[in-house]
Amino acid sequence: MNILRKALGGNPRRVAAAAFGLALVAGAVSACGSSSSSSSASSGFVVNSAPSSLFDGDELTQPFSKPDVTLTDSSGKQFNLVQRTKGKLTLVYFGYTHCPDVCPTTMATLAATLRSLTPAQAAQIDVVFISSDPTRDTPTVLHTWLGQYDPAFIGLTGSFTTIQKAAGTLGIDIEPPVKLADGSYSVTHGAEVIAFDAKGEGYLVYTAGTTVPQFQHDIPLLLAGRDE
Amino acid sequence: MYRFTLPGNGRDGHPPATAPRLVIAAGALCALIGAAASACSSSASRTTPTSSPSASAAAEAGPRGSASVGHIKITDAYIPQPATPSLAAAYFTVTETGSQGDVLLSATSVPASQASLMQESENGANAGTMSELTGGLAIPAEGAVVLGPGGYHLMLTDPTSPLTAGGSVALTLRFKDAGTVTVKVPVTSLLSDALTSDPSTGSSTGSSMADMPGM
Image (tube, rainbow over all chains, first blue to last red; front, side):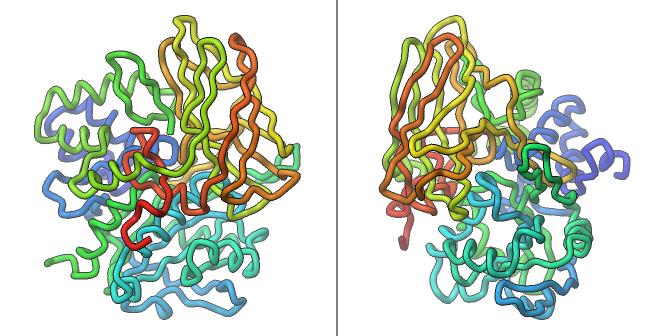
Protein backbone atom coordinates (compact mmCIF):
# COMPACT_ATOMS: atom_id res chain seq x y z
CA MET A 1 0.00 0.00 0.00
CA ASN A 2 2.85 2.35 0.62
CA ILE A 3 3.98 2.03 -2.94
CA LEU A 4 0.50 2.75 -4.15
CA ARG A 5 0.23 5.70 -1.89
CA LYS A 6 3.46 7.11 -3.17
CA ALA A 7 2.42 6.59 -6.76
CA LEU A 8 -0.75 8.50 -6.12
CA GLY A 9 0.99 11.49 -4.70
CA GLY A 10 0.71 10.59 -1.06
CA ASN A 11 -3.03 10.62 -1.22
CA PRO A 12 -4.22 7.92 1.12
CA ARG A 13 -7.82 7.93 0.07
CA ARG A 14 -6.97 7.03 -3.47
CA VAL A 15 -5.33 3.87 -2.32
CA ALA A 16 -8.54 1.97 -1.94
CA ALA A 17 -9.81 3.13 -5.29
CA ALA A 18 -6.56 2.35 -6.98
CA ALA A 19 -6.15 -1.00 -5.31
CA PHE A 20 -9.57 -1.97 -6.53
CA GLY A 21 -8.89 -0.70 -9.99
CA LEU A 22 -5.36 -1.97 -10.25
CA ALA A 23 -6.58 -5.45 -9.85
CA LEU A 24 -8.50 -4.87 -13.03
CA VAL A 25 -6.54 -2.55 -15.26
CA ALA A 26 -3.32 -1.07 -14.06
CA GLY A 27 -2.72 1.65 -16.59
CA ALA A 28 -6.18 3.00 -16.98
CA VAL A 29 -6.84 3.39 -13.31
CA SER A 30 -3.86 5.54 -12.75
CA ALA A 31 -5.45 7.95 -15.17
CA CYS A 32 -8.69 7.81 -13.32
CA GLY A 33 -7.00 8.23 -9.97
CA SER A 34 -4.81 11.05 -11.05
CA SER A 35 -7.65 13.01 -12.51
CA SER A 36 -9.64 12.65 -9.35
CA SER A 37 -6.81 13.68 -7.13
CA SER A 38 -6.19 16.83 -9.11
CA SER A 39 -9.53 17.97 -7.93
CA SER A 40 -8.81 21.62 -7.66
CA ALA A 41 -8.12 21.81 -11.33
CA SER A 42 -10.63 19.37 -12.66
CA SER A 43 -13.29 19.79 -10.02
CA GLY A 44 -15.57 17.53 -11.95
CA PHE A 45 -14.23 14.39 -10.45
CA VAL A 46 -15.33 12.38 -7.54
CA VAL A 47 -14.40 8.78 -7.62
CA ASN A 48 -16.13 6.73 -5.01
CA SER A 49 -13.57 4.55 -3.38
CA ALA A 50 -15.69 1.52 -4.09
CA PRO A 51 -18.77 1.09 -6.19
CA SER A 52 -20.61 -0.21 -3.17
CA SER A 53 -20.07 2.96 -1.13
CA LEU A 54 -23.19 4.48 0.32
CA PHE A 55 -21.67 7.88 -0.02
CA ASP A 56 -21.14 10.33 -2.82
CA GLY A 57 -17.99 11.53 -1.07
CA ASP A 58 -14.73 9.65 -1.20
CA GLU A 59 -14.68 7.17 1.63
CA LEU A 60 -11.37 6.61 3.35
CA THR A 61 -10.16 3.26 4.46
CA GLN A 62 -8.35 4.84 7.40
CA PRO A 63 -10.32 7.68 8.96
CA PHE A 64 -8.61 10.88 10.02
CA SER A 65 -8.88 12.09 13.59
CA LYS A 66 -10.19 15.56 14.08
CA PRO A 67 -7.10 17.70 14.66
CA ASP A 68 -6.73 18.68 18.30
CA VAL A 69 -5.76 22.22 17.47
CA THR A 70 -6.48 25.50 19.21
CA LEU A 71 -6.85 28.52 16.96
CA THR A 72 -8.57 31.90 17.08
CA ASP A 73 -12.17 32.16 15.95
CA SER A 74 -13.78 35.02 14.09
CA SER A 75 -14.72 36.73 17.34
CA GLY A 76 -11.07 36.71 18.39
CA LYS A 77 -11.49 34.01 21.02
CA GLN A 78 -9.53 30.81 21.45
CA PHE A 79 -11.20 27.86 19.81
CA ASN A 80 -10.25 24.24 20.29
CA LEU A 81 -11.53 22.29 17.34
CA VAL A 82 -12.07 19.01 19.15
CA GLN A 83 -13.79 20.45 22.20
CA ARG A 84 -15.92 23.03 20.48
CA THR A 85 -17.24 20.83 17.70
CA LYS A 86 -17.73 17.76 19.84
CA GLY A 87 -20.76 15.72 18.87
CA LYS A 88 -21.32 17.66 15.65
CA LEU A 89 -20.98 16.56 12.09
CA THR A 90 -18.03 18.81 11.29
CA LEU A 91 -17.16 19.88 7.76
CA VAL A 92 -13.61 21.24 7.66
CA TYR A 93 -12.13 23.23 4.81
CA PHE A 94 -8.79 25.02 4.49
CA GLY A 95 -9.05 28.15 2.37
CA TYR A 96 -8.54 31.88 2.29
CA THR A 97 -10.69 34.90 1.72
CA HIS A 98 -8.59 36.49 -1.03
CA CYS A 99 -9.56 33.57 -3.18
CA PRO A 100 -11.82 34.41 -6.11
CA ASP A 101 -12.80 30.96 -7.17
CA VAL A 102 -12.56 27.67 -5.32
CA CYS A 103 -12.98 28.91 -1.74
CA PRO A 104 -16.12 30.97 -2.44
CA THR A 105 -17.55 28.15 -4.51
CA THR A 106 -16.96 25.69 -1.70
CA MET A 107 -18.51 27.97 0.91
CA ALA A 108 -21.47 28.80 -1.34
CA THR A 109 -22.04 25.10 -1.96
CA LEU A 110 -21.96 24.32 1.75
CA ALA A 111 -24.17 27.30 2.58
CA ALA A 112 -26.71 26.28 -0.03
CA THR A 113 -26.65 22.73 1.28
CA LEU A 114 -27.24 23.79 4.87
CA ARG A 115 -30.09 26.07 3.89
CA SER A 116 -31.79 23.15 2.22
CA LEU A 117 -31.69 20.99 5.35
CA THR A 118 -34.18 21.01 8.17
CA PRO A 119 -33.22 23.30 11.07
CA ALA A 120 -32.80 20.20 13.22
CA GLN A 121 -30.32 18.74 10.76
CA ALA A 122 -28.45 22.00 10.31
CA ALA A 123 -28.13 22.36 14.08
CA GLN A 124 -26.12 19.16 14.15
CA ILE A 125 -23.56 20.46 11.67
CA ASP A 126 -20.56 22.75 12.09
CA VAL A 127 -18.85 24.16 9.03
CA VAL A 128 -15.28 25.14 9.89
CA PHE A 129 -13.23 27.31 7.54
CA ILE A 130 -9.58 27.32 8.57
CA SER A 131 -7.50 30.03 6.93
CA SER A 132 -4.52 29.05 4.84
CA ASP A 133 -3.62 32.75 4.71
CA PRO A 134 -3.91 33.63 8.40
CA THR A 135 -1.94 36.86 8.30
CA ARG A 136 -4.41 38.54 6.00
CA ASP A 137 -7.38 36.57 7.33
CA THR A 138 -7.80 38.25 10.67
CA PRO A 139 -10.79 37.34 12.85
CA THR A 140 -12.60 40.44 11.55
CA VAL A 141 -11.94 39.56 7.93
CA LEU A 142 -13.15 36.02 8.50
CA HIS A 143 -16.22 37.25 10.31
CA THR A 144 -17.23 39.53 7.45
CA TRP A 145 -16.43 37.07 4.72
CA LEU A 146 -17.99 33.96 6.18
CA GLY A 147 -20.98 35.83 7.54
CA GLN A 148 -22.09 36.50 3.99
CA TYR A 149 -22.40 32.78 3.38
CA ASP A 150 -23.77 31.73 6.74
CA PRO A 151 -23.33 33.52 10.07
CA ALA A 152 -23.07 30.14 11.76
CA PHE A 153 -19.97 29.14 9.83
CA ILE A 154 -16.90 28.99 12.04
CA GLY A 155 -13.79 30.78 10.83
CA LEU A 156 -10.42 30.00 12.37
CA THR A 157 -7.10 31.74 12.06
CA GLY A 158 -3.81 31.62 13.94
CA SER A 159 -0.19 30.88 13.28
CA PHE A 160 0.46 29.47 9.85
CA THR A 161 2.68 26.77 11.29
CA THR A 162 -0.08 25.52 13.56
CA ILE A 163 -2.58 25.53 10.72
CA GLN A 164 -0.17 23.85 8.34
CA LYS A 165 0.45 21.13 10.88
CA ALA A 166 -3.26 20.55 11.41
CA ALA A 167 -3.80 20.36 7.66
CA GLY A 168 -0.90 17.96 7.39
CA THR A 169 -2.56 15.51 9.77
CA LEU A 170 -5.41 15.41 7.26
CA GLY A 171 -3.18 14.77 4.29
CA ILE A 172 -3.48 18.33 3.01
CA ASP A 173 -0.24 20.06 2.09
CA ILE A 174 -0.58 23.81 2.36
CA GLU A 175 2.36 26.11 1.79
CA PRO A 176 2.96 29.52 3.31
CA PRO A 177 1.54 32.37 1.23
CA VAL A 178 4.12 33.93 -1.06
CA LYS A 179 4.03 37.57 -2.06
CA LEU A 180 4.80 37.87 -5.74
CA ALA A 181 6.74 40.59 -7.52
CA ASP A 182 3.55 42.27 -8.71
CA GLY A 183 2.29 42.60 -5.16
CA SER A 184 -0.22 39.78 -5.42
CA TYR A 185 -0.05 36.66 -3.32
CA SER A 186 0.13 33.04 -4.18
CA VAL A 187 -1.80 31.12 -1.56
CA THR A 188 -2.55 27.43 -1.24
CA HIS A 189 -5.98 26.20 -0.36
CA GLY A 190 -7.21 22.76 0.47
CA ALA A 191 -8.77 20.89 -2.38
CA GLU A 192 -11.42 19.20 -0.34
CA VAL A 193 -13.86 19.31 2.51
CA ILE A 194 -13.34 16.66 5.17
CA ALA A 195 -16.39 15.44 7.04
CA PHE A 196 -15.99 14.31 10.63
CA ASP A 197 -18.92 12.46 12.10
CA ALA A 198 -20.33 13.05 15.56
CA LYS A 199 -17.68 10.76 16.97
CA GLY A 200 -14.94 12.87 15.44
CA GLU A 201 -13.98 10.37 12.78
CA GLY A 202 -13.15 11.85 9.40
CA TYR A 203 -13.73 9.15 6.87
CA LEU A 204 -15.26 11.09 4.01
CA VAL A 205 -13.69 13.72 1.81
CA TYR A 206 -15.37 15.91 -0.75
CA THR A 207 -13.18 17.24 -3.49
CA ALA A 208 -13.68 20.66 -5.02
CA GLY A 209 -16.53 20.31 -7.44
CA THR A 210 -18.73 18.34 -5.08
CA THR A 211 -22.28 19.54 -5.61
CA VAL A 212 -25.12 20.51 -3.31
CA PRO A 213 -27.09 17.36 -4.24
CA GLN A 214 -24.10 15.23 -3.32
CA PHE A 215 -23.81 16.85 0.09
CA GLN A 216 -27.57 16.57 0.48
CA HIS A 217 -27.27 12.90 -0.25
CA ASP A 218 -24.51 12.21 2.23
CA ILE A 219 -25.36 14.45 5.16
CA PRO A 220 -28.39 12.49 6.40
CA LEU A 221 -26.32 9.32 6.17
CA LEU A 222 -23.52 10.93 8.12
CA LEU A 223 -25.93 12.23 10.72
CA ALA A 224 -27.43 8.77 11.06
CA GLY A 225 -24.03 7.26 11.67
CA ARG A 226 -21.68 5.32 9.53
CA ASP A 227 -22.99 1.86 10.14
CA GLU A 228 -26.63 2.47 9.51
CA MET B 1 -13.31 23.62 -14.87
CA TYR B 2 -11.49 23.03 -18.04
CA ARG B 3 -12.69 20.98 -20.85
CA PHE B 4 -12.76 20.53 -24.53
CA THR B 5 -15.95 19.62 -26.22
CA LEU B 6 -14.26 18.28 -29.25
CA PRO B 7 -16.41 15.94 -31.30
CA GLY B 8 -15.98 12.40 -30.16
CA ASN B 9 -14.10 13.47 -27.11
CA GLY B 10 -15.12 13.33 -23.50
CA ARG B 11 -16.44 16.34 -21.74
CA ASP B 12 -14.52 15.76 -18.58
CA GLY B 13 -12.76 18.38 -16.59
CA HIS B 14 -9.07 17.79 -16.59
CA PRO B 15 -5.92 19.63 -15.79
CA PRO B 16 -4.86 21.25 -19.01
CA ALA B 17 -1.40 19.82 -19.32
CA THR B 18 -2.58 16.28 -19.41
CA ALA B 19 -6.10 16.65 -20.69
CA PRO B 20 -5.90 14.71 -23.92
CA ARG B 21 -4.15 11.76 -22.36
CA LEU B 22 -6.56 11.59 -19.47
CA VAL B 23 -9.60 11.70 -21.68
CA ILE B 24 -8.35 8.81 -23.70
CA ALA B 25 -7.23 6.83 -20.71
CA ALA B 26 -10.44 7.37 -18.79
CA GLY B 27 -12.41 6.32 -21.84
CA ALA B 28 -10.35 3.20 -22.17
CA LEU B 29 -10.92 2.33 -18.57
CA CYS B 30 -14.64 2.75 -18.81
CA ALA B 31 -14.76 0.68 -21.93
CA LEU B 32 -12.68 -2.05 -20.43
CA ILE B 33 -14.31 -2.67 -17.14
CA GLY B 34 -17.95 -2.30 -16.48
CA ALA B 35 -17.95 -2.44 -12.73
CA ALA B 36 -15.06 -0.12 -12.13
CA ALA B 37 -16.27 2.05 -14.92
CA SER B 38 -19.20 3.07 -12.82
CA ALA B 39 -16.79 4.93 -10.62
CA CYS B 40 -15.13 6.42 -13.61
CA SER B 41 -18.18 7.25 -15.61
CA SER B 42 -19.91 8.75 -12.65
CA SER B 43 -17.02 11.09 -12.32
CA ALA B 44 -17.18 11.87 -15.99
CA SER B 45 -20.86 12.50 -16.32
CA ARG B 46 -21.35 13.04 -12.64
CA THR B 47 -24.69 11.44 -12.53
CA THR B 48 -26.05 10.65 -9.16
CA PRO B 49 -29.63 9.82 -8.41
CA THR B 50 -30.12 12.95 -6.39
CA SER B 51 -28.55 15.34 -8.83
CA SER B 52 -31.05 14.95 -11.60
CA PRO B 53 -33.83 17.13 -10.26
CA SER B 54 -31.47 19.93 -9.42
CA ALA B 55 -29.72 19.59 -12.71
CA SER B 56 -32.89 20.37 -14.55
CA ALA B 57 -33.74 23.13 -12.13
CA ALA B 58 -30.30 24.59 -12.53
CA ALA B 59 -30.87 24.89 -16.23
CA GLU B 60 -33.04 27.85 -15.31
CA ALA B 61 -30.21 29.47 -13.42
CA GLY B 62 -29.89 33.19 -12.93
CA PRO B 63 -29.16 35.64 -15.70
CA ARG B 64 -26.32 34.94 -18.06
CA GLY B 65 -24.59 37.10 -20.62
CA SER B 66 -23.69 36.17 -24.15
CA ALA B 67 -22.15 37.73 -27.23
CA SER B 68 -20.27 36.70 -30.32
CA VAL B 69 -17.67 37.93 -32.74
CA GLY B 70 -16.75 36.12 -35.93
CA HIS B 71 -16.36 32.47 -35.16
CA ILE B 72 -16.19 32.99 -31.39
CA LYS B 73 -19.24 32.73 -29.15
CA ILE B 74 -19.35 33.73 -25.50
CA THR B 75 -22.15 32.17 -23.49
CA ASP B 76 -23.19 31.60 -19.89
CA ALA B 77 -21.28 34.61 -18.65
CA TYR B 78 -21.80 35.58 -15.03
CA ILE B 79 -19.98 36.95 -12.03
CA PRO B 80 -21.02 35.72 -8.61
CA GLN B 81 -21.15 38.64 -6.23
CA PRO B 82 -17.79 38.43 -4.48
CA ALA B 83 -17.53 37.98 -0.73
CA THR B 84 -14.25 39.87 -0.86
CA PRO B 85 -15.24 43.06 -2.71
CA SER B 86 -11.80 43.59 -4.20
CA LEU B 87 -11.75 40.22 -5.89
CA ALA B 88 -14.29 38.71 -8.25
CA ALA B 89 -14.29 35.84 -10.71
CA ALA B 90 -15.97 36.03 -14.10
CA TYR B 91 -17.15 32.76 -15.58
CA PHE B 92 -18.15 32.08 -19.17
CA THR B 93 -17.88 29.57 -21.97
CA VAL B 94 -15.91 30.31 -25.11
CA THR B 95 -16.96 28.34 -28.16
CA GLU B 96 -14.95 28.32 -31.34
CA THR B 97 -17.17 27.42 -34.27
CA GLY B 98 -14.37 27.79 -36.77
CA SER B 99 -11.82 25.23 -37.75
CA GLN B 100 -8.71 27.18 -36.95
CA GLY B 101 -8.86 27.67 -33.19
CA ASP B 102 -8.18 30.92 -31.38
CA VAL B 103 -6.56 32.30 -28.28
CA LEU B 104 -8.17 34.46 -25.63
CA LEU B 105 -5.43 36.97 -24.98
CA SER B 106 -6.70 39.53 -22.52
CA ALA B 107 -9.69 41.32 -21.11
CA THR B 108 -10.75 44.69 -19.85
CA SER B 109 -13.81 45.62 -17.85
CA VAL B 110 -16.18 48.45 -17.05
CA PRO B 111 -16.16 49.21 -14.17
CA ALA B 112 -12.44 49.08 -14.55
CA SER B 113 -10.50 46.39 -12.81
CA GLN B 114 -7.35 44.46 -13.30
CA ALA B 115 -8.54 41.51 -15.34
CA SER B 116 -6.32 38.43 -15.25
CA LEU B 117 -6.83 35.01 -16.74
CA MET B 118 -6.26 32.55 -13.96
CA GLN B 119 -6.06 28.85 -13.59
CA GLU B 120 -6.56 26.60 -10.61
CA SER B 121 -4.10 23.81 -10.32
CA GLU B 122 -3.06 21.14 -7.94
CA ASN B 123 -0.25 22.10 -5.68
CA GLY B 124 0.87 19.36 -3.39
CA ALA B 125 -1.33 16.70 -1.90
CA ASN B 126 -4.99 17.60 -1.69
CA ALA B 127 -4.28 21.26 -2.07
CA GLY B 128 -4.46 23.72 -4.89
CA THR B 129 -3.35 27.14 -5.88
CA MET B 130 -4.17 29.71 -8.46
CA SER B 131 -1.79 31.05 -11.04
CA GLU B 132 -1.97 33.45 -13.93
CA LEU B 133 -2.20 32.01 -17.40
CA THR B 134 0.58 33.42 -19.46
CA GLY B 135 0.22 33.42 -23.21
CA GLY B 136 -3.55 33.42 -23.10
CA LEU B 137 -6.11 30.66 -23.17
CA ALA B 138 -6.18 28.48 -26.26
CA ILE B 139 -9.61 27.71 -27.66
CA PRO B 140 -9.53 24.57 -29.78
CA ALA B 141 -10.99 24.47 -33.28
CA GLU B 142 -14.66 23.55 -33.21
CA GLY B 143 -14.37 23.22 -29.48
CA ALA B 144 -15.12 25.10 -26.32
CA VAL B 145 -13.41 26.03 -23.11
CA VAL B 146 -15.40 26.66 -20.00
CA LEU B 147 -14.24 29.15 -17.46
CA GLY B 148 -16.00 27.95 -14.35
CA PRO B 149 -15.58 27.35 -10.65
CA GLY B 150 -12.51 25.30 -9.91
CA GLY B 151 -10.75 25.69 -13.23
CA TYR B 152 -10.14 28.72 -15.37
CA HIS B 153 -11.58 32.06 -14.47
CA LEU B 154 -11.12 35.66 -15.31
CA MET B 155 -10.17 37.35 -12.06
CA LEU B 156 -11.27 40.95 -11.64
CA THR B 157 -9.16 42.68 -9.03
CA ASP B 158 -9.97 46.00 -7.41
CA PRO B 159 -13.03 46.99 -9.43
CA THR B 160 -13.56 50.72 -9.28
CA SER B 161 -17.11 50.25 -8.09
CA PRO B 162 -18.61 47.41 -6.07
CA LEU B 163 -19.91 44.40 -7.96
CA THR B 164 -23.25 43.62 -6.43
CA ALA B 165 -25.96 41.19 -7.45
CA GLY B 166 -28.32 42.70 -9.98
CA GLY B 167 -25.60 44.82 -11.54
CA SER B 168 -23.45 44.00 -14.50
CA VAL B 169 -19.97 44.33 -15.86
CA ALA B 170 -19.11 45.10 -19.47
CA LEU B 171 -16.34 42.71 -20.25
CA THR B 172 -14.30 43.17 -23.40
CA LEU B 173 -12.42 40.07 -24.42
CA ARG B 174 -9.62 40.19 -26.94
CA PHE B 175 -8.96 37.18 -29.12
CA LYS B 176 -5.91 36.67 -31.25
CA ASP B 177 -7.85 35.97 -34.41
CA ALA B 178 -11.47 36.98 -33.88
CA GLY B 179 -10.67 40.37 -32.40
CA THR B 180 -12.58 41.90 -29.54
CA VAL B 181 -16.05 41.25 -28.24
CA THR B 182 -17.88 42.97 -25.43
CA VAL B 183 -20.28 40.98 -23.31
CA LYS B 184 -22.58 42.35 -20.65
CA VAL B 185 -21.99 40.05 -17.71
CA PRO B 186 -24.60 39.97 -14.98
CA VAL B 187 -23.49 39.95 -11.36
CA THR B 188 -25.41 37.13 -9.72
CA SER B 189 -26.01 36.38 -6.07
CA LEU B 190 -23.23 35.49 -3.67
CA LEU B 191 -24.45 31.93 -3.50
CA SER B 192 -24.85 31.61 -7.24
CA ASP B 193 -21.62 29.74 -7.56
CA ALA B 194 -22.87 26.97 -5.33
CA LEU B 195 -22.47 23.87 -7.42
CA THR B 196 -25.90 22.46 -7.99
CA SER B 197 -25.11 19.96 -10.66
CA ASP B 198 -22.37 18.47 -12.72
CA PRO B 199 -19.86 21.20 -13.42
CA SER B 200 -19.01 19.49 -16.68
CA THR B 201 -22.44 20.30 -18.02
CA GLY B 202 -21.31 23.88 -18.09
CA SER B 203 -24.44 25.93 -18.31
CA SER B 204 -25.92 24.44 -15.21
CA THR B 205 -22.89 25.14 -13.06
CA GLY B 206 -24.05 27.48 -10.42
CA SER B 207 -27.60 28.56 -10.23
CA SER B 208 -29.77 31.01 -8.51
CA MET B 209 -30.81 30.09 -5.04
CA ALA B 210 -34.40 30.19 -6.17
CA ASP B 211 -33.73 26.77 -7.59
CA MET B 212 -32.73 25.28 -4.31
CA PRO B 213 -35.14 23.54 -2.01
CA GLY B 214 -35.78 25.73 0.97
CA MET B 215 -34.28 28.83 -0.61
